[in-house]
Length: 131
Image 1 (tube, rainbow, N blue to C red):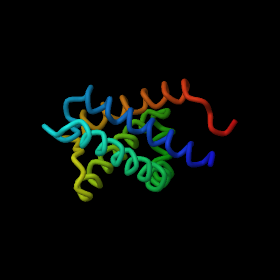
Image 2 (image 1 turned 180 degrees about the vertical axis):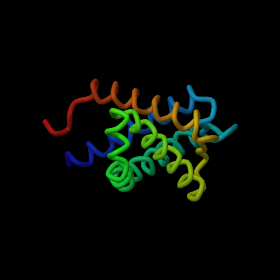
Image 3 (image 1 turned 135 degrees about the vertical axis):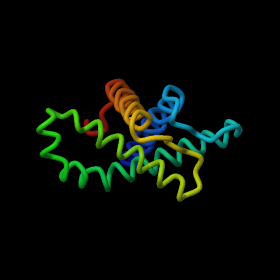
Image 4 (image 1 turned 60 degrees about the vertical axis):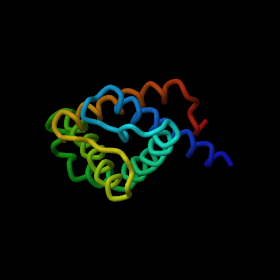
């Protein structure tokens, strides 16, 4: 039962972070002109896709990018996070979800920064599921 609650919390955190990135970054879009229920559904489904991509693809990319992450003292992690956001945009397009990132350089990078900052704040506020 606890793992289901943890999963729902992670999806909610991802959803809030992605939604705020859509509001704050001009090149990150959640469907245009649709009703609130459709937008909320899209946010939740994109949050699930984002979580799956971060769970499956991100560790492989970070492993391959480790020398660059070390060389740049961790700053290349922002590029890795932007790549995960761009991959989420691509996957959402293939799944027919109304989520799109216009360009990698600035839109995905700024979106990744917003998502990372929101996730950090929400994880600091929400209880740790491992306790």
